[in-house]
Image (cartoon, rainbow, N blue to C red; front, top):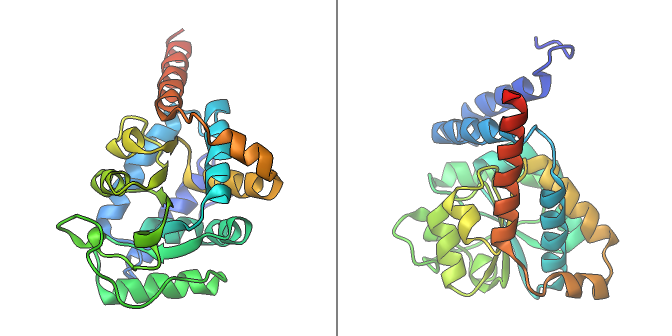
Length: 243
């Protein structure tokens, strides 16, 4: 039992959930490593949503609302950590949700799909083909899902697929705590924030933004500005600790 009084309670509960779901196949063992890497950057960011990240989340919501065919791409870690938040975002944005995995097996697809559907999420299903120009299984997707999307939200993403989606002419919204990752650097809107905080904030903005404000937010998006802001925030925090 992890006492709620423990200063790392939320972090420990999250780690335990990932470890438990790795035994079911929903989370891959490699996914555990990826989570630890992200958590390290959350420490550097003070485990809170920065002002810049909140603005990125507002722009992300505007981009989803303005899209003709928005899609949320979900992997094992995202499903394990944020199924409820994905359900909320699907309702608020109208986006389709597609399961897309690097370590892809039919058993994992079915397990993750069940978990998402238990939370009321409607999934794109059916045959997949290699519509994304990648040699591994993240190149597989549905024609009426990621292939046809004009905007794709890619939480906890592989950098090479993010780059491939951008090269296909799609707008990419990333959620990645590492501002130096290739995913963050190639994304149209890099959201440098923890997954559940980011998704909740984007949902909130989807519910509150009007069409005119959403349209104004998506003009002149400066993705590199969000990355610079995150790095500067980390720099200042480190200097404050040393002082």
